[in-house]
Image (cartoon, rainbow, N blue to C red; front, side):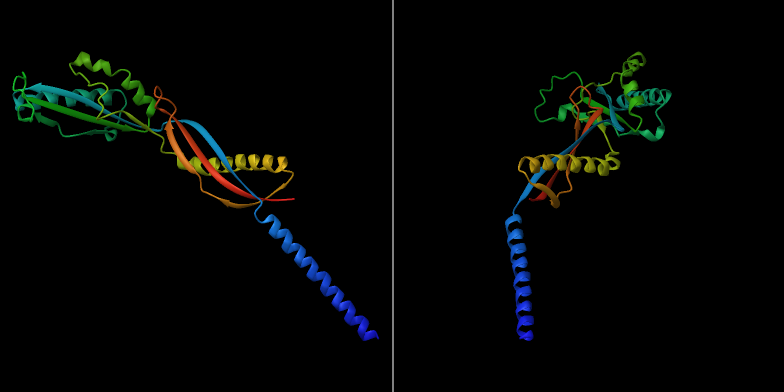
Length: 233
């Protein structure tokens, strides 16, 4: 009789354990597809920390040796102007003059007063953006020294970059994920659920753009990350 009672007890315990396992399985099955996917944003405005300034000047004429002499004088004048205003020699690069023979162009009408167009490009590359911007604002001073700068040259635009954004990436990713969690938490509250663990998350897409067309030296750094959370009752 005692052995029957023990056997019955073992069977009863087994049934209870099996029931709990089945219930857990049903709960997992019910909740496994309960997820919410949200996006988190982090955005910062920063000053550019690198500027590339191509200084373009042209000479027209018919005598190449004379043109090269004039270009050489311009080159020295521009370089002296830059160094006198605090630009380092290591920040200055001088390209070889570009010569176009206008009479050799396919659609030339041969009525042009000059045969040669010589272009000089001196490029300043610096991390001291404020200093370079102040010199750009005063480049008209070169006119007093007989040097005309070509403004708005579309082939050689002034460019501003923000190269230190890698230092910001961990903090911005942290902020983006925190913002995503706030959104997910609100969704869970509205749906009378509890926010659970992260199921998946991407590394985030970073972008760096000008704040606007008038201030290209101010950059907008932006990251958007997508995070999926599981939900539970």
